Image (cartoon, rainbow, N blue to C red):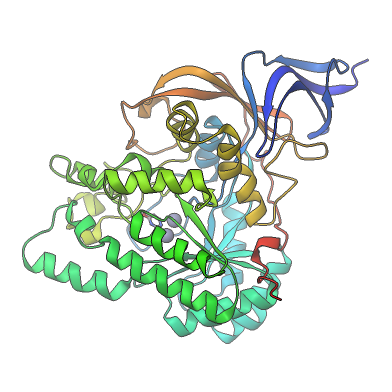
Length: 473
Ligand code: DUC
Ligand code: ZN
Ligand code: ZN
């Protein structure tokens, strides 16, 4: 009689804190034993020479998010979570977005309908608050937080999304009183508007001018303002998709003053530069995202911040638009001026292999740091820990088994998203997750997608400890 559903033997297990060589046993979707020579499983995996890591938690991705008229995201909950699973990720956190003038509760109900029966791996929702009315602040948000949506993103830019400073303060105050985590997209909308007009007036319409319209200054100013508002209200915030030195300086300054600021960065700020937006013809549209990728010296600042604790989490910001698509990067089938190119690049499946290869294998960050940034900290930050984000007795058996030596040349045709390109085409990485388990079930096995639509569950998030104001005195 087998004691366990599945036993992984002889692997090297790494968490954010430890590295252990032992067997690991799973029953009913959870990790139930770790040790030497543990009993038989109905199924067994020999992980000799492989790393056994907690599955990734991608805490910033956009899936099937309702878009303005004429645009459509390429990935729904099936293709997006399938792609994530094949890249070693076992939890995703996309966004239920409120449309201005609409109910947030209705947006969440709609988003549940989009996810149900489709997700291959587990998922939780962040909210996007675009219209913090009295009803939203006093009724909807407290109720949604009780239902497990304990984090929300707010924008300082994009006309259809942005909040003014007073509205940001209202949302931060609500987050403080209810124990929720606020993520802030920090770019100064008016500066971008002014620069954009000047560029267009001068006839500068190509994709590369997207970067010129959003220089570091606009991110630096908004990051500083977000920090000041968080200090005023006395509540921690997370600054999302930090792109380079000037924003990093603001966050280091805030921390030196004892202000609790968390920071996220993404692969595009390590592996792309503004030059990629200047690719031949319209090709640069493939790399249009906001904030834009910077340059090599800024990439180094991001690497330093990943290693030294400046960054709390590393997410994909997967925002999938097809290139050859009249609802994607070529709206109505046309090569449009840069302000009309939908922002975002795909990255759910490549997030972990890129960081593993260039970070861990090249000695820039430790394996423990890799796990911390990509799995443990996102789970902690958003109230999913210790169910997700670690390998421990009682945790969900969400596990990625990595071959640290496997060389892979990234080609879009091998990826499992529904986008027609990857910005990392032709890049060779070393190390790839060859198996992924979601609650003990193999969803990805060395080239075979085994995960089924509907296997993933909605995860209600707890109120994160990291959202609590600092205790002083
Ligand atoms: N920027 C965002 O803020 N969200 C989605 C994609 C992007 O580029
Ligand atoms: Zn953003
Ligand atoms: Zn985003």
